[in-house]
Length: 192
Length: 249
Image (tube, rainbow over all chains, first blue to last red; front, side):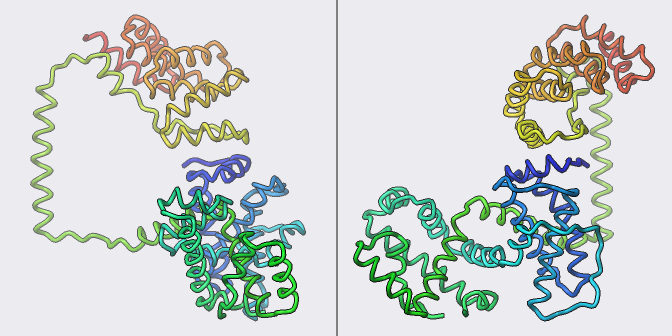
């Protein structure tokens, strides 16, 4: 089995290399799953936490703000542990003691802030629903988010008029909003 | 949540309003709580969709979850006794065909056939990875068996720095895989010239295979003899066997 150095993992994640993502999943997901399962969480909770943790780290890498002060494994575990503790707090599920399966570190404030902002969780839910839209809708919205003009979107998608491209984009976004609003997991983000 | 202001919000976010309309919208936004909530909702959705790369990463992780679940759910296949008889019968037939082929194929091996028989790049990746982004990318291409790209990337690294013997080694293997045997031989010769690295034994072996593949049999024989004479060489047994086969040709 191939083992990657921490530097290689960071560079591989920056490139979103399938091999590195696969490696990180194979090596670290079982640890996170164990942590979550041992502390009142389900397998699905573990998947959410692992994914959110990875995205937080990925964003730090692509912003060139990641400074590893420990091994990647400890760092990843610490981020996911924080995410899970926060989620338990939100659920008013207070544990006397967390069963840890790995060493963890006190994370820098910027990462703590990212974890407490819940933005990554909200984005996950939005993105989950986005990926359930029709391929056309996904493509139109992706292009629009990249600031491609409606005229160009119309050309790319083979629409006859710019106005039709605008209508389609509007309908796609409305459909996405509806799906998100109907998801009970999203209510907490939009009720204030 | 009901959406009553979608049209104006989308118009505003898409910058389709006139300056006067924009100003009025901003004023309304400051006093209308319902509009403000709907507006925030829409902006948050846009923010979540702006990072194409994060969408891609999430999709990859989700695919891994799904693949793992499918693998875990695959039923353990239980054969009934009738099937066992069929499998056993098929195995006997296959063995018979295999034995016939084994004893009827002529003993002489072409250099090509010998190369194919002995060349394997499987499991050669065992170096400690460097954090160098170009090197990581090249190694990833190598693992993905995109040897054309890998050879090109390793080659680019070597233009800047010729001191890393690991890079020479993978450049050599990638060159074999892309049928550039001369380039491969040069790479392995660089490793042998350095003579102070972990790749020497492997380089000797692959160099002999490169010679064989390019029909430089005498050179291959000399190289193989060197390996065969060294009882500590990792490839000694393979070299001895290959030498015997060459001498039969």
